[in-house]
Image 1: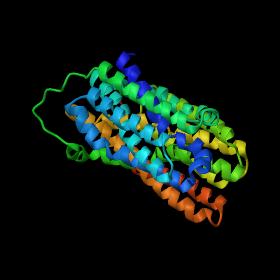
Image 2: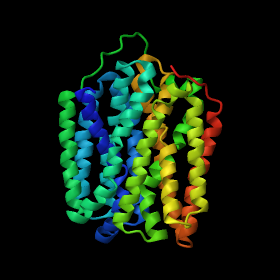
Image 3: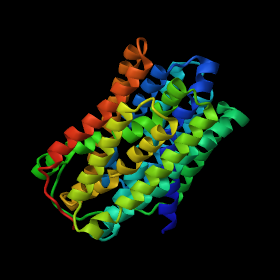
Image 4: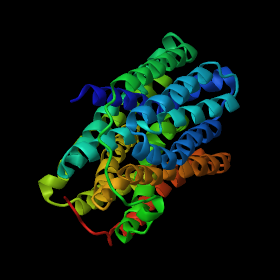
Length: 390
């Protein structure tokens, strides 16, 4: 792999870390600065909301100035600056501000890679390369589990965030000097996101893109910690271990989805069957929410594995994009994917806060059941999509 893509992959490791690490800090943050699960749900939602909102300007920047400047500048200012703010947080509001800044910093990283793949490699290999980048980058998901829990117990969460601020800024500087922009597309056509929205084939993909990442991102990035603590009284290190196992399943799922369209000769039905199995795992978790710690972790791993179709759905959509709108196209899909998570993080925090006062058990049953139903609704629309494998 090219040196610039290796560096972008490391930057994506940081992005995956930042969207998931709050789950294992729920106990120390509650002890040190008094945050509640609802506070962390709101802060996590802000990360996803800002990340999603940035996709439109990021897409335009990728098409106009290229991935080098887009990724390096935003990661330096947002990622490095946001982690620094987090390291000095003394209230839930500071955590929310920090997560918003970090969302800005992480917003261009994966899409910069996808832009390079779409512009520099054969179309048939896009889904495999996209899944490989997502799978390797998901090591950040693993680091955000047990290793982060260990670091928080060993050197404290503040020093851990300070180290992450330095790592983010250093990576951004490396991106500025190493990333190679693909040659610009020479064309007379002008276009915008509105032109993409006029493509009928994409409208069958948008609903599933909106909901497919909600269960795995919501559980792994936030609710696995409070859930295991409230229902099974699992300590921080145990939550870290469970998060690690779920993170591994998400990586395995991503790598399994990558070449599946070429193996089976279809994207549509690989995506459909995988997401159907993921939805069923959510519903089973809702029914057997307090049955067994081992069963709950196994079902969350199933949700992580089967819910990893994110890059394959983007690959499906990419086959409909005109070349000069590639940057806007991949970021538009990312907007739907991350935007759905953002909306649900806010909603899940409110839902949990209201129901948990009466019954914590019922709160998690409703939460996990809602995750499964949302994916099923997305699949209903996806049934009418046009299959395409390049």
